[in-house]
Image 1 (tube, each protein chain N blue to C red):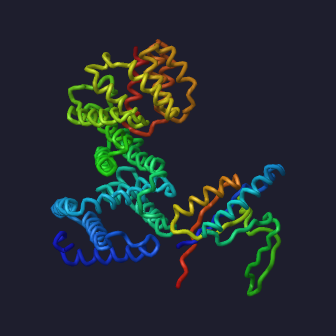
Image 2: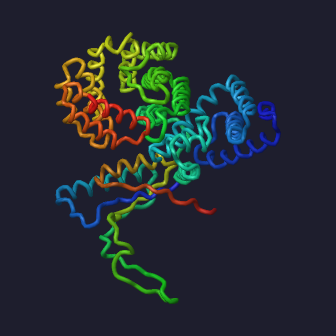
Image 3: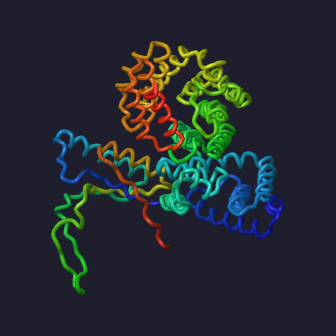
Length: 383
Length: 117
């Protein structure tokens, strides 16, 4: 049966052996699954696909994707549960966050160890060690391979969403290195977000996260010009990806109808307001501020407070915003200094603004962002 | 089933909580032990005297030499241990969570190696 799907007897044999090995390790403690044969086939197929993914050439990958589709139609439920179990195991809170990210990208995502290492500026051997340590902990500590019970689902789901959003952010605002964007990470995070939305569509925050990523990612084409960073207010809005924005809006409308707001949905809503504005000047900042107030009420953090201060500047004036920013304690966060610099510049405190840009520059590790901050700083001293 | 060691950790050289607090902790820990026993997960538990009551034995030139005091001076000490027998880490974490609430100290959870049999 597997051979039919995989078209390669030795691959199928190896996969079945691996699946039996997993069954031997798991079944005595976890109990025999409701459909043991189905479980074995699913596991064997996943093992084989994993192997294909590791070793495959492009054409083989396409074949694997095709096979996956065929099997998915045949065994939709098994595959669904299997994917979910794997996601929750990879994002188990007993694993360190960086291990969660690496495992999720490696086991659920479609990136190779080399690609993940490149995206996080790590040596492939370092990343491989991180992954094998995490796998060893899953094995030795017997981290269960299952979907959490309903009562613990919200907390555990939070970790899964955080991992996916972290991957997206590292792609969209790369923290270090020479490029602003690492598009492969954005794509991968959105792919994971879509998968999760397919698996647990009843959780509004899952849809909220996907909407948030789509709405932000829709601006990807306008975020850089010639590799240089362009601020949201200066972006050419005709370059925004309208179908992506529309998809994000549609998801948000579903969320709104359910009326169970959460941090990801609120952030998505804030981004939707930006997407709706025909120009930066015509942005509905009052609505954005209202959404930030709600966000501060349910998920307060210094970063949210900083973003809220940006909206305050537009609604209640720069002086008011500056007071708020001065009170935020995020000394190492370069964007705090960048926001402060921009506010100081707008009220004509040029020397203070230049010093703040300098502080932002010193704390930023991304080359393109550093260049941007330097340009801002230089434009001040020239005038 | 798998066995997990739940160690009660506290900073070395710290002072004991006041008697009233200590009494509450003791009764909470005893109640939790009963709960573990009736749930059938309890294997063993016990509190430990301070590490200056320890004696260390080591090989030296084919002989065994005794020294007074702990093996290593560390920032954390183990104040007691509990061993539970549960299906997986999630179940162990559930009990560890209760133990952390009862002792008000950090709890380290470590899996035992499987028996070779």
